[in-house]
Amino acid sequence: MSGSSSVTAMKKVVQQPRLEARLNCIKVSQAAADFKQFCLQNVQHDPLLTGVSSSTNPFRPQKICSFL
Picture 1: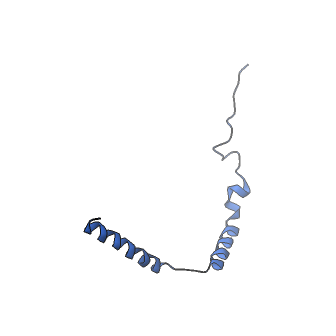
Picture 2: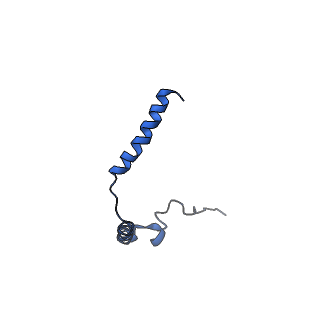
Picture 3: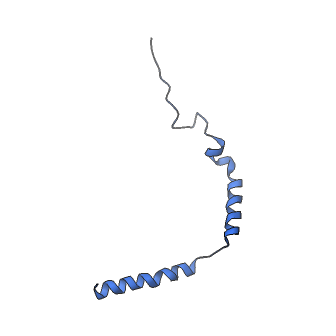
């Protein structure tokens, strides 16, 4: 390992804890409560819960037109 690559690697090792120290930490219980509140506020916009209308669904089966 050359001297410059060693210095670069050590800078990365020192930089990571500095980045982590700047993060705003909250308790898991608070994060879970905030997430639950967000989900309940946006439940009407969730297509997995409310479904997608057939007129706006881009993946609906195409109608087949046939002539006899």
